[in-house]
Image 1 (cartoon, protein in one colour):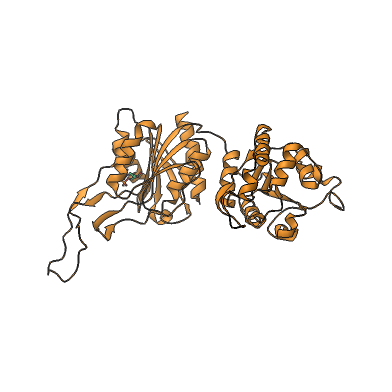
Image 2 (cartoon, rainbow, N blue to C red):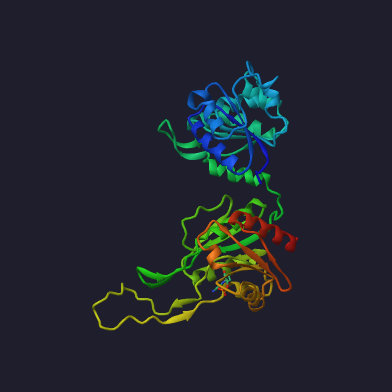
Length: 393
Ligand code: C5P
């Protein structure tokens, strides 16, 4: 979504300027073409060379003595898709709100024709000051995008609002701004990650699912404008911005959470690796060796098939399942299309997918199978969002 976009990164004089280096690196990694403008005080925290070395096409520091541009503050944002000021100090917010243009940064903000976004970074008292709040309100009325700030520990030792958002959070928000809203306000329920079936209080049966694909799909749906509920098994993954998350442990808890939620949703995407069996007789105390000569006996009980249960509801949402197979990929996936009565199964080979950042999948429907080239889980998520949007709209 950011690939090929020209983004001008404005860096002003806050200690959070060090985070802009990472921000530029991430933007460049996403394929954005970045120029940087720095105020004089920003250059006291980081140097123009840092941004150059991290991939900035150019770094503009002054309106004067710049042999590459006739009028730097005008040239800087020509053809830009976005002017992102991060960190944005109280000073630049005030100047931008008033239309002051007394240096290359403020003049470039005034001269731009592209949208402008500010990621404020300042001490909590400066942020809460009526003057700053008035300026922010004015900027929003003028159409500026305000990203954050976050609350937390500040460089000055104070706690509270005023920290610049983390670079990854800013990138997520920008991706949202650049995404086509093909699932606008569509309510999507997703399961992701592994389930865990206890054997005793310290042991259990689980699987190698990382949750990465399900979380990537939740993020892609949210970026496409959907209202997303994510029912997640045990994983340390961060909840994508704007996604409502319900944590569960066992397959039965996942089943209950899904059945509770499903009637409010128009799409159900079942990505979780759900245990087919649970232990019918989990021990209440830790099973210890040596107390008896018997080996412990586990009795298994079948878990409900969440996907099939949802698909067979009277007002079933549009259902998508996943199939991780070790062989006979398409035949096995198609059998699931019929058995679980779902229109679409995303099929992949276990050895291609589990725990990895990329995957090779096939979209299997009743009458066709569409293979996708190997791609990152994020790209697969975007392809799936496009496919679902086509089917439900
Ligand atoms: O039958 P199998 O486990 O291979 O099917 C995989 C698909 O079914 C996945 O979409 C998975 O999330 C879903 N599933 C489920 N409940 C189960 C088992 C699998 O929803 N108990």
